[in-house]
Amino acid sequence: MAEGRIIKAISGFYYVQSVDGIYQCRGRGLFRNKKITPLVGDFVDFDKRDGMEGYLINIKPRKNELIRPPIANVDRAFIISSAVEPSFSSLLLDRFLVLIESKYIEPVIIISKIDVLPEKEKVNVDNYAKAYQSIGYKVEQVSSKEPFEIKGIESYFNDGVSVIAGQSGVGKSSLLNALKPELQIKTDDISKSLGRGKHTTRHVELVQLFGGLVADTPGFSALEFNEIELENLGDCFPEIRERSGACKFRGCMHDKEPKCAVKEAVEQGEISQFRYDHYLTFHEEIKSRKPRY
Ligand SMILES: Nc1nc2c(ncn2[C@@H]2O[C@H](COP(=O)(O)OP(=O)(O)OP(=O)(O)O)[C@@H](O)[C@H]2O)c(=O)[nH]1
Ligand SMILES: [Zn+2]
Image (cartoon, rainbow, N blue to C red; front, side, top):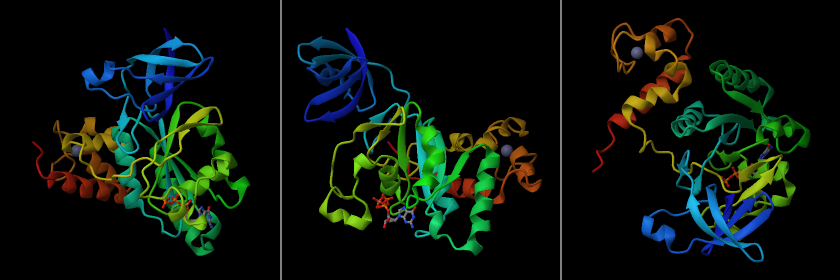
């Protein structure tokens, strides 16, 4: 038996990257009975057959799993937030951050299109960058139009599986193409309607990039907090997570409760007001969610 990782799945075949190459594997009936579908990103055991073929035997436990694109064991997510067009939105960025934190994925914040950011708006974007850095997040400002502007982020891809996330038009495809020109992912410049655009269903593939693997399809396309429970929301904000133990009441929601360490930190300026406001916004959103049965 051999070990490997599924890097591509297409019409019933799973392509498993192993130490000695890529094996084309079938799943057999095994997984259908167990109601578990192998996913790209899965670590698997497989039986080798002649000519780089094989059969999947076992799927190892997953650290996490995304639905769109279907991919397992994601280590890192690059959240692309453009400085302009569309203009920078800390609310949207926080939405991505919460979803990514909830899946135990390490976020890296990329502020794109800085080449077209007017001089007078630079301070504003810099201030946000500093606010996120002070929480402990990695923040990089890049331009995909000037290759030297992306050099600094290559080392983030050194290991594991990364996904690129961000709203439409922020430059996800452009960034991937700038990092790995062979990908030739269609961008708005080349009219996506001709190729694999937003509405074309296509498979996801993990491709090699600077020592690690990156999904060639953006992650976190759905931005609802359907899977996040109210009591776990605070844990998705690192600066709230690290202070919640000091709140007077166990299970403090950091809202109306007295002697709340989080609200005190906001008053002291240790937690940014905008982050706390977004916490409350998401809190309301989850609270008013229709119950699921
Ligand atoms: N000036 C400038 N324009 C950029 C940069 N990155 C992307 N663009 C432009 O922004 C537009 C959108 O870029 P895409 O790479 O297609 O964005 P995307 O995030 O992949 O978009 P979706 O596929 O819709 O999610 C294109 O016209 C790009 O040329 C950048 O760093 N600087
Ligand atoms: Zn509290």
